[in-house]
Amino acid sequence: MSEIKLYNDDCINLLKNIKDKTIDLICTDIPYELENHGGTNSALATRCAKMRDSVEFMANGIDYEKVFSEFIRICKIPNMAIFCSNLQIGKILTFFNSRNLKTELLVWEKLNPAPLCNGKYISDLEYIVYVHDKGSCFNNDAPFEFKKKCKMYPIVVSNDKVHPTQKPLKLIEELVTVHSFENQLVLDPFMGSGSCGIVCASKNRNFIGVELDENYYNIAKKRIEESRSEEHTSELQSLNSIS
Image: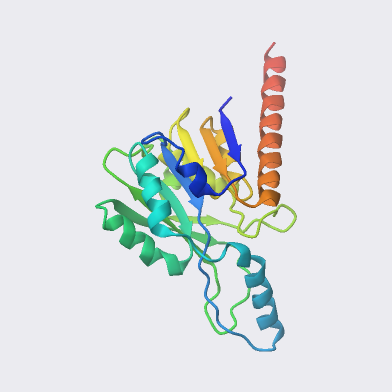
C-alpha cells in the first residue's frame, strides 16, 4: 500500500522541513481570494452572502512569494497543479513565468453550478494553473479524456460534501494520473477534505497532506483511513474469489 503522512499544521512550517527536490507532484487547492460584489436585500443576494461567509476562513489568499518559493525548492522538477480563483490567475502566472517556468491554464466546468448570479455570470468555472519545467512528469499512457484542458464534472452534492470547496475525486484522479506515476510522492499542503490523499491511496502514490484547520484535518484523516480500509477489503475479497 502507498505511504500516507498527514499533518495538522500550518503548511509553511512543514514546507520548511521538507528536503530539497523530494516531491514529484504538488496538487493543491490554495486559499482563495474572492470577489465581493456588495449586495441587496433580495433573497438571492442573501444566499450569495451566506455562500461567501461559508468560505471566509480560507478566502484571504496566501503569501505567494513564501509559499511558491518553497514549492519550487522541494519539487524534484517543478510539477504543480494549483486550483485557484479567477482573481489569482494573474498573480500565479506572473510568479512562475518570472522564474522561467511553463504554465498552462486548465478549467473545471461544473455541470451543476449553483444558480447564484446576482448581476454577474454564473460561477460555473474554476481554474487550475499547471506549472512545470522540462522533464516534469506527463503520463502519455493516461486516458485521452484525462489530457483535455477542460474538465467536466458536477459539484460534489450536499450528501457527500464535507468541505466548502471540496473537489470531485475523479477530477483529482485525472491530475494525479497524468502528472505522476505509481510510487511517486504527491504533496497537498492545503489538504481540506483529503480528496487528493484518497486518490493517491487508490492509485498507489505516496502522499503527504497538511491541513491547518483541526476539524477538517480530522475529517480528511477519517476519509483517507476509510478509503484505504475499503480498498484493502476489496483486495482481500478478490484474492478469496481467486483462491
